[in-house]
Image 1 (cartoon, helix red, strand yellow):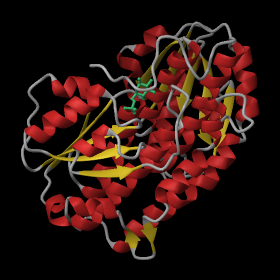
Image 2 (cartoon, rainbow, N blue to C red; image 1 turned 45 degrees about the vertical axis):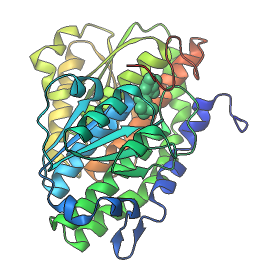
Image 3 (cartoon, protein in one colour; image 1 turned 180 degrees about the vertical axis):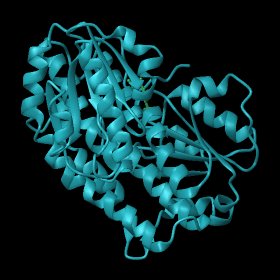
Image 4 (spheres, helix red, strand yellow; image 1 turned 90 degrees about the vertical axis):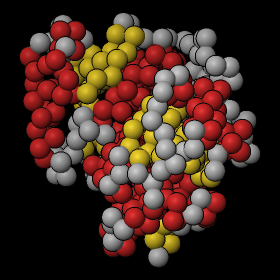
Length: 369
Ligand code: BG6
């Protein structure tokens, strides 16, 4: 049931504040973060982990890439993110102290299931982040942290992505407490940021109208580039994936720092480039670097669409469009910055008359390897 929305995609994008709030519910209290599902593994086991490998496919892998920045910062433990199908068919180093976290909305993606089985057989501890109660991947794992995004029907993932990041951030804070790398007060600050996300998501969703206009202007676009730095980099990858999936447009996401090492050669007059701009107040250094990237591509004729913090005056002279997002601590920006990119892909798909819920050639859950 689309509940009055024109598509499941529109409905699910709009449900993102609830997807985050429901995934937090019951797991945050005055005494900090509490994830009962992790008791299956035990805090002593988590304290002894020396390395984390996150596996997933598509959007799920990008949620993992975002979380890598948070978990390494908070828990001081190395985190690698690998596509499930690549992990499974090489000879990854796995020990009893390796924790493999799989991310899968459906819990049935065969590539990810095989990676989890492989990791378990090799002696790793396994945790599943999953949105579907009782699915195969959580059953194959030592512990499961469920996201509570509600059923996701549209093939391209949206609300599951923000819910996956929420669950991973909760896990990172749990791990930081177990390992003693953050004080209770520090954990409380980060939890406060997380709890503020649903209301900020509601604000970002209000940019829908201006994004729709932009999509209509760009309905003939043949290629779009996305640039981001730090946690904005995986958001750029996700923005490009959404555009490929929904609007069948060639799209690439790049780390902004990589621009001068190759991608800048793609910039010609009129080339649309979305740039995810870090907060000027909270990450001044990265902000300056990304603004300088914007100047470089603008000088070569790029059409710049900046996703930037509300009131960021530095981007105004160089951007053709600015889509504002509310202020958030740097690690929390992906929750907000991804939304205009989802909306853009959806609106462009609609402007081209495509089926936004069931794009050609794709399946919601790929249960073959
Ligand atoms: C793809 C879907 O086939 O599988 C994507 O089209 C999704 O939207 C990916 O991100 C992974 O799916 P899951 O269920 O493992 O998260």
